[in-house]
Length: 291
Image 1 (cartoon, helix red, strand yellow):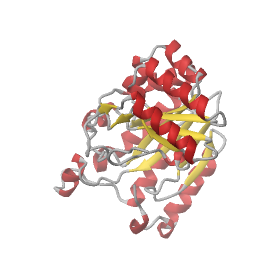
Image 2 (cartoon, helix red, strand yellow):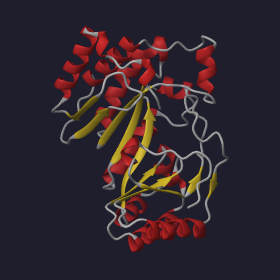
Image 3 (cartoon, rainbow, N blue to C red):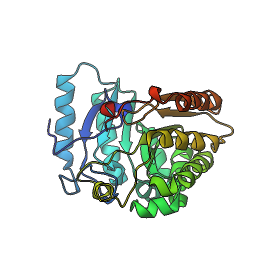
Image 4 (tube, rainbow, N blue to C red):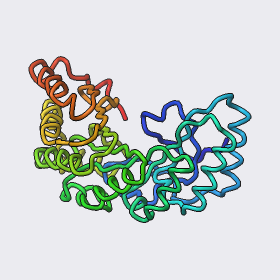
């Protein structure tokens, strides 16, 4: 198996076979992100990808999930992705799902027919980093996509029959804008209605550009209590109708662990946050928070 540089995957892909089909991130400009700074973006040679898949078949008796890395592997042209998915299906007939990171731009470049073809060949989930529902925050963090574009990409993915797992980041607006960030994340989730929502809490580490702003005092982090208040406000603004959305805020970065399905578990998750606000001793200690 060949891996180049640091390899990242979503928490839910912890037990997946990870295959790099691209190296790095094509955008790689988000100020909060320190991932993929150790490599320049490039496409892996198809023969090398197939060689890794064949070696994995020899190594593992059973592979139920495969994750295609790196940062936005959906950037690959459809014909190449389809050949990779076909190879996975041939080598691993037991595979239940193939996952992939996709930027909003990646999704919007695909036609509905191309997305449907990927679904039919085994693509079972696309992980999209929304980060915020606020255009101001998206501009500040140099996301490279607007709220409208991100919303469209989520809806387009879901309409193609591929579940979208969408990440938002608590604390990303800092002290000055957390209320707007919370409310706009909530309304964006309501509009896009993805299958899955993952809420992380901001931790900036070198070499993320935002780390220098925090160190210099230009960006003021939220207190743990404010993070909980922000999450509560976001949940209050989520109003999903006609479908269920799995909500997870149980990442290692979060102060309070939440697991539920919207809309049915909305009130119970808010109650869990209210309990944490009444007793701050229930918040995760900083020593145990990590990316």
